[in-house]
Image 1: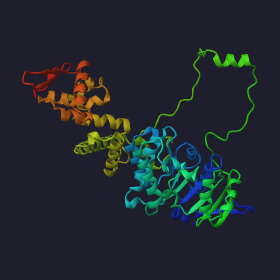
Image 2: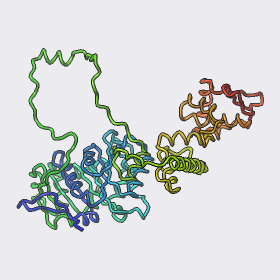
Image 3: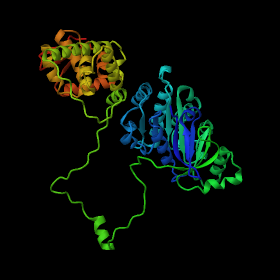
Image 4: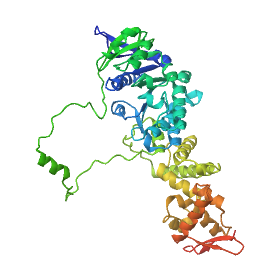
Length: 490
């Protein structure tokens, strides 16, 4: 199998190649001032090696999301998910060997560091059977592994630095090969930079950075001036995966480009001072006929994204037409699937902590259980699962039963997160059982806060869904006017 890729040409016009197999074992450090061509270099490496190795890109500026246009990369917008969802994706990515781009452009610097730390830690903590080789590219690495404290809290800085240190120092045995890029070596933590054995040094102007770059390349201090004279897109390369001696490299062209493109000069608008002033301060006119406006795509739910990663399919692929089944077979299959759904929901609720877990993780657990039950496909999407799980927490596993129709009609007028606790009350009233206590209602609501449970009951009473009665002994009973039923006092 061919394991080397061409990244550019040397001074004589000969192709310069990087041994990807060796790169995975020895890691890579790229340095260059802004505008030196670091992102272009990383893009060239990613494009050429896309068919050879799994790729994971930590992208703070959203520069690499366009890789998905030409390759099979899945783009994850870090701002759409919480920390636990990001960690779950990291684990699944290692299991299914999906190439991804984690875009952090919508987050501030502290949130970027927190998100990257959670993601890298999940990659690092994957089970041994999932230690497949992966190239982990981190652009602007000085943000995630700063050499000194900055504007972020010490807790966030330490977590991010620890994750980057694990990637560069201990990641090799777990199949993770770090390829990090930085504008300034002086701003990058030394214990992170020191673990790389391959170097690509671009144009650098500050003396302290030139000196460190020359030391890494094995050049004498008087030769460091050559680093300042490098043109855009030219790098000095050294390392076991590149060359045994410093080698000047002109990086080749790429098939994709950043969304922003390259800024270049363009003519200024032709207008005199009065015209320009009138345009700047004119009141905005609302057009009589609404214009077609490009709508931003809705964020992909974490559960759906996990499913797409597992299935290795594009995020916006057209759904294939379902196979044509005989009516009797289709009915039998639907009945079997519904039985599996009911049994799976009951098994999940046997875990007392399930009510407090994120919906994305619950849906992932549900999907795995359905596959273990040998269903051909997961019978519920995330929205349908959210509804069925809420009903199950309220004790309604089969919403088609006639005895639940009245209670469900009342529950549909409440916010979705209140359906489960209301159904707990309705079931107790229908069975003539004592009123559910705050702990049971809290589990159905997904909260351990007594104050939130009190506010929940007050809200449902204000909506007319329930009536609360308390006797002089402090015992509570709850009635449901539309059903003409009430729980026993408790």
